[in-house]
Every structure is written in structure tokens, then in C-alpha cells.
Image 1 (tube, rainbow, N blue to C red):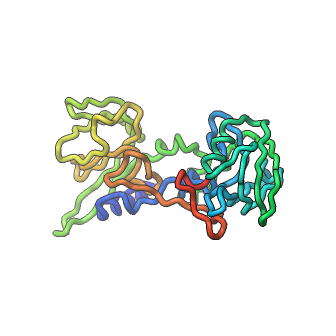
Image 2: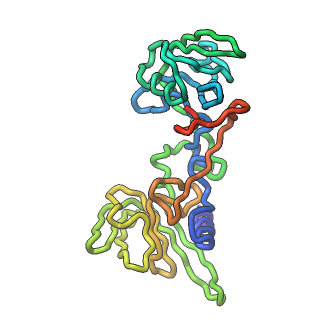
Length: 277
């Protein structure tokens, strides 16, 4: 495990950034191949169970989730939605807004065109089901660990590398959670996942992202030292192959690529207001 973590750090030191890090979602099962209407999970939002894209004809169903309210109502891929509950909709965002204002158990009537023929379809909305966790192909030992606990299971580690002159150096990755920040003293105290506590002095030679004043108690951090000297600190776990794409982490802005198992209908374009709904 530590060797794998070290390998990720090596690649980043060579590349000078986080551009080569594999996005967390693709490996940990947090990425989504479809985005559903009513995707909020914590508030029991109403759920229709479709992915919608913007096409030249209007908001168009790109995918229907199996056993969803949409499938039960008879909605199909390539249906073009013209109105919802009698209100015209011009884009996927308009459909989303209508669904999100409803509750599980409410009905919604969609006026659609299918193969050029107009018809109305009524669906009874449900609460969005809990997503089924995807298996982790790289670290199957981590399967079953909730996403919000995954970071704490990485304990850090060290590795050696040679410089241009052939001299050996040791790099160490520490992972932990911030317990104290003193911007005036330029110190950051971290409870390490390995069980220790360490206070880092953030000198002018230390690369830190975001600024020290933006760190707060409870933030996850990764600290990189070389030969015992702190070199870099960043929020999250951007020096690891399983973490990335957080808003503030990393030393370059990094956005993991997203993927969809269902392609949009031919001739459609993704909605600029967020793609799938």
C-alpha cells in the first residue's frame, strides 16, 4: 500500500503538478455514469429516473434508468419533452426545476413527442434510491468503506529517489486532519492518519495550496517532505492516486474527466447548465 502511494508521489514530483492523478470518482465509485433528476440524496427529493440533454428539438431523454418511475410510466430514450404539468420547458434546467419542487409520491405529467407524435405521459415520482457502490478495481480491500471515511484509511509512506547527480533522497507523504491553524505564527497542526500529531512550520519555501489562512480545523491535508524538510502542503489527498478533483487542492487546478455509459442521442448537445439531469 505504501509503495503504491509513494509511486503516486514520484509521478507528481516528476510532473510538477497533479495533472496525472487519476480522478477519485472513477476509482472509488463516486463518479456517476448517469445523473438523475432529483439527485439530492439527503432530503428525499422526488426522483423521475432519467438523464436529459439539450437537443435541437428541446430537452430530450438520453437514458431511462431501469425500474424507475420514468420506465414504469413508459418514457423512452429520444422522447422530446415539450411541457411539464402544462408548462412549456425549453431546456433540461426547466424540467429539473419542476421535478425538484415536488415530493416523492407526487405525479408529474410530461407532454412529449416520440417519432414526431405527441402524447402525454404521467409518472408517479419516488424518492431517489441509494446508489449501489461500485467495486474499486485498484484497491478492492477498500470496498465497503464509505466515501467520507476513505481518506483516513491511507496512512502515508516514504520512498527514495535519485537526483541528477545520482545522490539518494527520501520523500515522505503524511496524511491527516487539521486540528489547529495559526496564520500569524505560520503553523499548521495535523492529526496524522498514522496516529501521531505533527505541527508544520509553513515557511516561505513551502508550497501550500490554498493559502494557510484558508485552512480550517477538520480539513484533510497531505504534506510532502524531502529528506525531513517540508516541501508542500495541500488540502485533500491530491498526491495520491485515489484522490483528486477537490475544489481547492493541488498545485495546479485539476478537474477529473467525467464519463457517461449512456451517450446522448445522435445529434444532441449536452446542456450547458450541467449536462445530465
